[in-house]
Length: 603
Image (cartoon, rainbow, N blue to C red):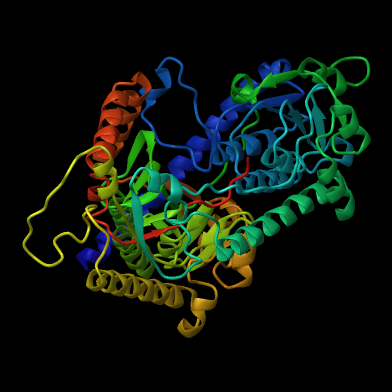
């Protein structure tokens, strides 16, 4: 009886707090809109957003004082752009938004998400304002440089402007992997590799002298899928026939004048001419950057659901221990690592938070350690038993990145996402020849037949190779079992789509490795549906961190990197590892790797 009374009181208390919160939001919106009416004349016709830096999927967390570091730019993310565009769409006065595209770092999958966001912007405009056709908000892209991702995103706009001396440089796709086997041999270094099949080509750049037929076939089907996406985006955005688009790509580069004549852009213009082009023929339109007008945009009170969707970002090469950011990219590892210990804490925090009804896990990783991947997989599997887990794949979610995605009840990817690569590889460098070249002689004394299994003194013996092959086979079998259980696919048939093969999101959908194609908002909607929550936007998302200690460690590392204090230490560490042959010691704790390295990238 007492417990029931406590529960009832708790519910009443929660309802009261929600009522107070709703009343406060309505009052705040009313005050803000009153201020807007007083300063209505300061509102522009078009809000300007400048894209001039790397664009991330989710807005990274940092303490408030990070904003005051001299020279530091606030990050731009698709999450932030979605919030900004919804604010602009909700204002009845603003006529549209202008994107000034300088030189942003944008992947093809992110470009597809940005184009989808522009479509959603028009839906928001219709829902908030129900405008007449002449009053529909316009989206304008002004391009100073043209790359494949920026142009694919621009094709989602109403108008594309281009600076007069900018060239339309959509030249097509290429991939030029480099192979260092013979280079390393000249240095006296060889690389011993065990992998599940020739399709698992992560170590080919150091173990082979040329591209294998399997790797060439894989690169061809990946580029075919990407190329089809690019042609389709241009065809739909510029209202051209597919044959016209391929001819224009084959004839590129085009000058701005030629691009205009071929309907690839709408007009040539310098940035200062945009206001005149958007004016009424007599008066130029007024343009102001978002940060100057955000407080004046119309605010719509919204009643939020008490439950939330948690968001966990798992990004970087997967390793054991804590997540880290390196100022100098490490070979194979890269500049950002996803630590299994950090991911564990994030996932457990989501499990314990009673206000979180479902979780969207944003995976952007080429994989990494098999052990660390399995630890993260286990935590997500446990989470999924209690709350629905939806996986949203970023630019790459392959090998170990796909391993940790397998527990998701739904997997959402973009068409250009690189995924799959279900396979295992183990490699070690043999540096004896390098030491001989410099007159250095190493001798070993050991106890145990396999004490030198991970040593770089010599290659594997026959018995040792058999041991390594058995380990690779065991992990590959476990990988397939995880995928078969999570995706409800026949285990016996998985080799046809596994064995290290990499697929785009569009190809993965055809093979049952993902459930649907879409952006982050699609993943949130799927999570709401699985948790029996409304999909009308009333359910908020909440980023899940690993806790206060992890949050304090990351900003400290960022400040250190900004000041350049640990650059010398990193350089000394890498130099020491290269000279003393200790690189293999970095891999001893995680000898088996689920990694998709050397994947094609857009230049």
